[in-house]
Image (cartoon, rainbow, N blue to C red; front, side, top):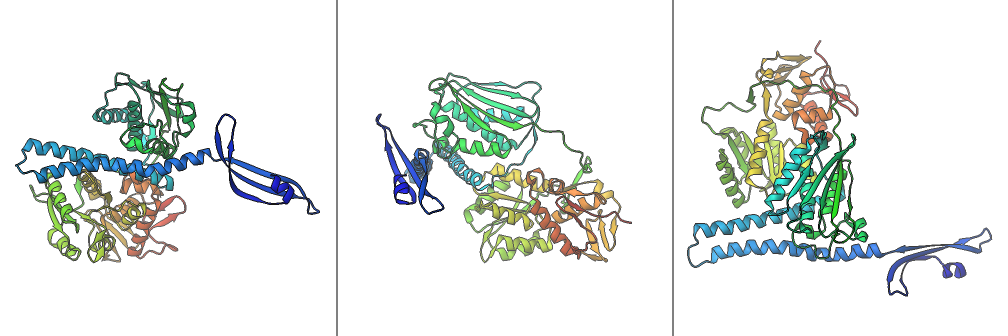
Length: 540
């Protein structure tokens, strides 16, 4: 301030440490600017002193973070490497029981590594705004039950006391993500509570929001730590211990997930040794708006070719990694599928024609081409479900794959149960009600949809479209004269987990128009309702 007042100097970002008589030292950042009169004389100065203590704390934690993560990675890696080396280097045959114990260690530690990587990726998605939640009406009891089961499987010994009122309403929530939040908060509470101390879960609601509270009787939280709990790299105690919570990301991820639902999260504590309560809110599910109901039937048939009794569903897997191919073959055969494997992309089109698989698993990285290019070639001749199975976990890769016509996107590593479940879902999505088969042919100008034969023609010429494109066209045609919103189309064709992916709908509509010869600026078949969705006119 003196330099600005006396010398007319502007001071920019000078770091100054303020030392106090009690021994405290506060780092500060100082800026000062002189104020001139109309005559050019300095008449005043404006100064800003910023306390850098929080910034210094974040920087300290940031510097510690690589070491924390390195430790968290090395611990399971050491166990995995040690177990494998013991079996491979043993001079005597390893008994079946011993081998099983080593494999259990490897499996457990691989899960720990996966969870750590998932936490790091979730934090990145939260910071970049790409964390996706598939919100729908869900009951709290099911989510609390699942979180309790996960918590108990983690060998935590604390008793859970759940108080859920009988009139607890449904909430708008992504059940998987909310179970993740509950499990994280329960694990956190258990870590800092005595083994014999129960953990309470209490649910209240006010008609607009439901509040879930997790209360423990453990070490508590110092008052000065409460404002910093949900920041990245922050840890409740210096000895936060081992496990994922030690990275300082768990509570930050909880905050990102809850806020993505439109709720908020906070913590209360009476102080050290007096326990803590973590609370978060979720919006009450409102009554759904009147929507167009999809036709339903008791019996369904698969869109793919009809198989003879006893013939297994065929899956074609395309991957350049021999170990991945072996893993896929074992997992899929145990799931009851007939597996066709190849690492040569140039054979895929022939295999499609010769083997007629029911589903294709496809990596993005292939020899001499990309999975995207191969998918486009497949879509020119076949509507077979295609699921990407890849190590690429970027949001843009997934969006690009779905826009190109993929049915699902799975990132490596994955468990056999996840793979089989996702395959089942992709096959199930190709189920269309019997009512489709008995509908009369839809005719609009030169466009004709023969529902019985699942055949599309324009001017008598057959049009080759994928099964997903057919479902989009089917929904528009069977609701001709009505507007289907983007979310209604997404829900009916891809499922509720794709809610909000309007670009995906636009991409398929664009491809459909191109194949039907329909001009978007002067359409005949598919009309755009700006910012709402699409419609087809009623046949005259």
